[in-house]
Figure 1 (cartoon, rainbow, N blue to C red):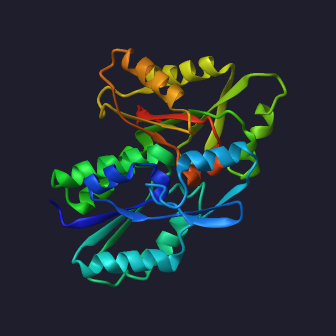
Figure 2: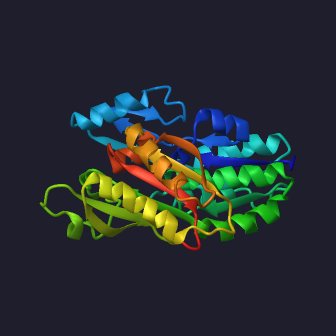
Length: 289
């Protein structure tokens, strides 16, 4: 195996088991709910993720905080001491200051004999996770870090994020969605369809009537934009609504495109604080985002 470390943020929403299997180093973000701060580990060890969503449903306010420079510097130094170069995959710079912290930290080591490579994934949740998954697979195949860096810088623009939320209030309140007001109609059962664009921003694309139509629209986006020449992996994340995620999986696999849903997982607290309960998101390799 190539001798370098891959550092990810907990906003990737991979399972802890997958993180271990893929040998990824976690740079955890933090969230605060009911006045108490938690470190966002992928196994939700300080607060079960189902309880987190129940608290949101009950009206609790959750906020998030980024990685700071010293935390990144400590992680880099730790991997350097193992004799490894470092590749950092950072949460979208359009959604968090975490990338900037990583950039400043990496610059502290610019004269070091070992190297730090930093990628702004311009991704979130399992879109970010899909990039990390691809990176780990290519490393396992022996791809050198310089080649992997160039490969991911191109491939990240082909990782599509399509999602629907039950309540835009969470995105609007957290300042994560510009131009949302046009989608905040009072008509009952209107559901927004959003995606993450090439700059890593959350963009409202459509609005449809009803939850079932919203889920079918996500599947339609897979059919319309998937790239048959790219990997067939599909990840689905959900805001504590496994039943809806399983419906989307079934519909995707019924398309007959050879796509395989390899992971369904909760949207963790860092993303869930802004997306809210009931969010359903699908991530796959597309001709373009």
